[in-house]
Length: 330
Image 1 (cartoon, rainbow, N blue to C red):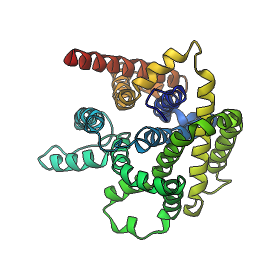
Image 2: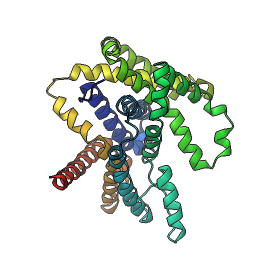
Image 3: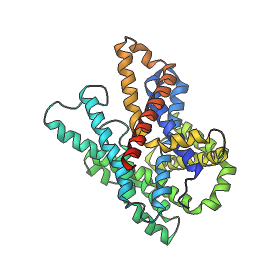
C-alpha cells in the first residue's frame, strides 16, 4: 500500500471516532431505552477499527513502529490531556476520585502509564504497545502473510484461560489483556494494506453482508443468546473484523461524494476528537448541574445534544491545535 491517504481508511477512522463519541454521549441514558442500550453495544464494534488502522498504517510500513515523530504525535497530546483529566478528577468532575495528598502523584503516574486517568485513555498505551510490536509483526509477515493474524488471534482466544493475567498486578493485567484483545485487528490491518488491490473489490461487494453479520453476532452476544465465554472470544474478533471490513467497503463508495471533505476533516482530527470529547461532556455536565437541570442529563433526548456539542467542541479544539502547530513550523 502506498503512502497516499486512502479514503476508505479515512472513512473508517471518521466512523470510529463518531461512534466512540456517540457511545459516551449515550451511556448515561441507556437505562431509559432498551433499543438505545442495544445500539450503544453495537457501536462498540467500531472501536477495534482504530487498531485495524494502526496495523494498516504502522505495521505494514518498514520502520513504522520506530518513528520518533509518530511517537511524539501520540504521546505529547496524551500526556497533556492526561494532566487535564487528572485536574478534573481532583475537582471531582468525574472519572473517579484521586486522593488529595502526595501519594496522588504516585497514583497519577501509574495511571498515566496504564491509561486509567480517564475512562477512554486506556486506548493510547495499548496503541503504543502495538507500535512496539510492529517489527515483530513484519518479521512474521515476511515468512507468511497470514502468520501475524493467526498467532495474534490464537493468543486472543487462549488468553482468558492462561495463568499469566492472574499473576500480574491488576492494572498491568488490564493493559496486556487489551493489547492481546486488539492485536488481531492490527494484524488484519497489516494484511489488508498488503493485499488491498485484491481484497478491496471483494470487500466492497460484500460490505452489506459483512456489516449485517457483525451486527447480528454482536446482538446475539448482548442478548446472551450467544454467551461471551473465553472460548468464544474469537467470535467477537470475527464480528469486529466483519464490521471493519464492511466499513471499508461502504467508505470506498463514499469516495468523491459531496460528504467526502467533511469525512476527511473528522478523520484528520480523529485523535484529538477522541482525547478531547470526554472533557467537553464533563463541562456540559457541570453546566447542566449548575443550572438545576440534573434530571435532564439522563433523558434520551439529551443524547443528540451531548453528541453534537461534544463533536463540535472537540473539532474546535483540534483545529486550534492544528493552527498552533502550523504557526510553530512556519
